[in-house]
Image 1 (cartoon, rainbow, N blue to C red):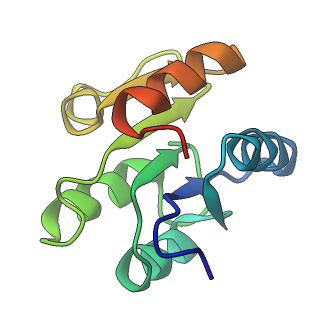
Image 2 (cartoon, helix red, strand yellow; image 1 turned 120 degrees about the vertical axis):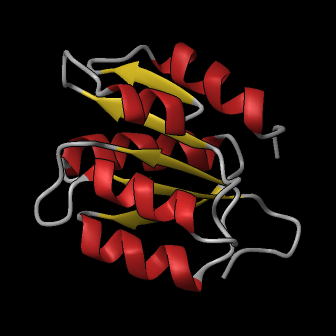
Amino acid sequence: MPAPDQLVVLVIEDDPLVCILLQDILHEEGYQVLLAENGEQAMVILTTARLDLVTLDLNLPGIGGDVVLKELRKQDTTKELPVIVVTALETIPREVQELAQAVIQKPFEIDRLLSTIHRFLPLS
């Protein structure tokens, strides 16, 4: 359970190595990190947890990241939630570009990812 003033980031990523990397980086920055390895898990967390930011892979098993993003934008509690898409896809659908606050291509530079996150969340 995060401290009341601790910012919470949901990492939606099916690659275990990327998940661990993001979790470690974000913990070092002082954020509480929740993990979802597929769209179904993400949808449950999105409806039950207090979140401050989401990193979202598009290529997920089951419910794809684009569907998660569209659903997220439909809900009153998450429609303003900052979403950073982190994907290996070379072509990003226009709708995804319009619905996400930022898109970062894999492989990514850690400094670039952190500077993008810091645009939306203060350092903890």
